Length: 289
Image (cartoon, rainbow, N blue to C red; front, side, top):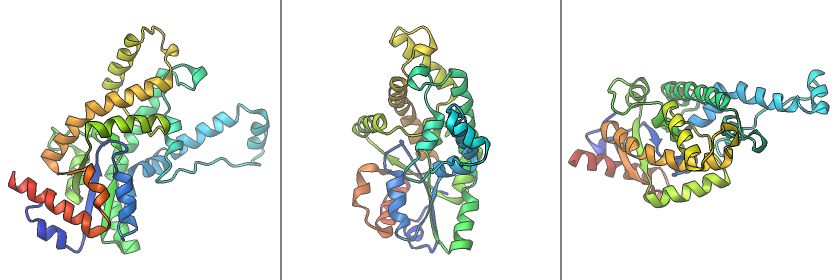
């Protein structure tokens, strides 16, 4: 959806937007704000963690519980129930399931298991983004929302190719929504790494990037065996590395198929009109360029 007239977009009765960018840059904050201003908030990570990976997450929790004799007996007799309480603002069940590879004594996963869960996430993320048009209609027909914001995961750019015109996910999103890149700065990236260390978010690597960064990390730290890698250190190091890898591809996606707004402008948004005015400026800039 490329718009030529900013005024027509802003004054339209219906608005549908997909925001993308670095994990932690402000996509969910913005979506939460707009939700209180009568926008429907579609969280891709929530959809992934409930509809598409919910069973994997709960089965993993039950598997851990089965290691405890007291809980195992209660599970066998159907005396207790275990569920995931994933929420828009708390994706920890999904993050915990995806985990990080490395030393099992430090909570790490075998690399083969980590690859398997990464592949599950890729399939789930693609499916969640292909669901956007359905949820636009559902939000309108069931709840009466005329404004819709899709809050994509930071790894959206890992499951699309911005240089392929007929990428199915890009086609789906651009046919039904305005693609908007929330662009952060190098300083934002440094702050996000520290926030990730304190509260890890779901992390997905393209398979080839995972292999490259895994070997690079082991070489950097003179580690030979996969099981000797500190999973927490690799997760934080990998998060920073993946941010740098994604930045030019985020911009390519925006340049080819959407618009760019600055993360620094988000704190000034107080309501729907402020957001639409910010989008109008982005539309005008693209048209002028």
